[in-house]
Structure formats: C-alpha cells, structure tokens
Amino acid sequence: MSEERIEIVCPHCGAINRVPGGADLAAGKCGKCHQRLLVGGPVAATEESFDRFVTRNAMPVVVDFWAAWCGPCRAMAPVYERVAAKMEKEFRFLKVDTEAEPGLASRYQIRSIPTLMILHKGRVVAQRAGASDGHALEAWLQQYGITA
Image 1 (cartoon, rainbow, N blue to C red):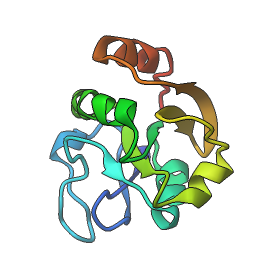
Image 2: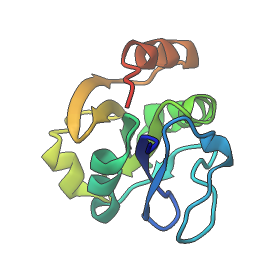
Image 3: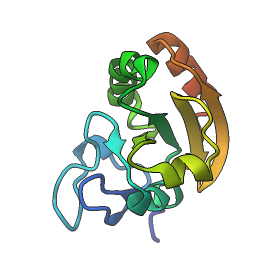
C-alpha cells in the first residue's frame, strides 16, 4: 500500500520534493541540494521561481508584495518574518519586491503595497492591502488554513 505524498518546493534550489503526507517538515531536507525545506522565514521569489512555488507546493502560499522605499512595507517586514517562522508548517511564505519584479506586480494587479495574497494550487484565495500587526496577520491566515 502506498503512502500519500505531498509536494514541497525547496526554497534553496527550487527542486520539487515529494514527502510523505504525515512527515515532519521541520526535519525535511531537499533531495537535490540537501538543505532544509523549511527556512524559518519568508523566501524571496523572482518571476522565474514564483510560479513553481505557487503551483507545486501542497501548502497554501502567502505572498508579501513590497518595495524597499515603502515605509509601511519596512515596518511590517519583521512582523511578516515572525509570523512566517511561526506558521511555516502550514503556509509557504514568499516576498516579492515589486521594483525588482514588476511583471509579477502587474500580473496580480498590485496597486498598493504592502499587499498580502494567499494562493493555493495557483489560484488566489484571498488578498489584502496595508500593513498588519502580528495578531491580525495570524488571524487572517488562520481563516484560510487549507489542507493539502
């Protein structure tokens, strides 16, 4: 009898890893580069890596669209990092610099930053604009905790 497997994209090399559904992801390592699958924070995504992360991860993906010149983005960055470290077994967290990746900002019609978006299996599930504190961000994410 075969055990159900889920796909997790390596944040280091982009390889797609198939792991047992009940596996402890905190201990998981990439089969290709042998680095940890969970990194304790958000992963910087590029136009090249973005689609792989949002379509091939079994878990929902939270994306922070931001820019270095944006004061609210800089203020929210440590909050986003803390929540990412706390909830990364349930969500994959990405950061997209809208200045460096204008194609992604255009594709998702990002009009204000920071904008947070939850995607699952390539589909936008939820979106919100504006900075958030940690409690509000966690509560918002818990509404959309989607099982693989």
